[in-house]
Length: 123
Image (tube, rainbow, N blue to C red; front, side, top):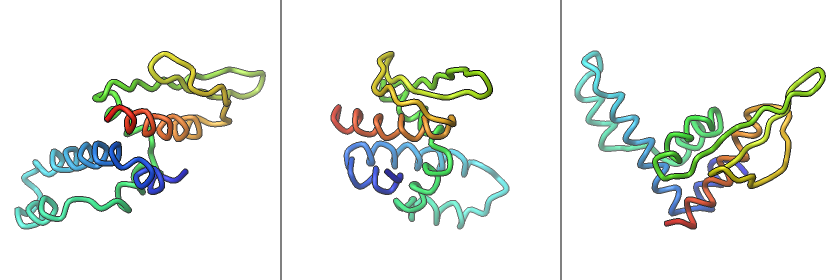
């Protein structure tokens, strides 16, 4: 599932995630080198779903902090093999899925998808 699909499928969780990203973006604006009119424009416009989805798709790991703040803890495990490693994930100290991924980003994306579902059901 793409990040945009996650935002649409889990609207309660999407609000939390969008608010978290907006807060991080506003924190980054506390920089004297940026013009005040630009800062004000960003504050007024916020961030739309497409932009947040693009950031999530590129780096799902960035959301781990947002889920931590909501007591959903994601752990990525490395399962060493003979010539390469595979990855799996645990959420809140429980195996949610026993699927093994060929790369870390695949495990992160799967974990984020399940974390969205968990957060949405908590709200």
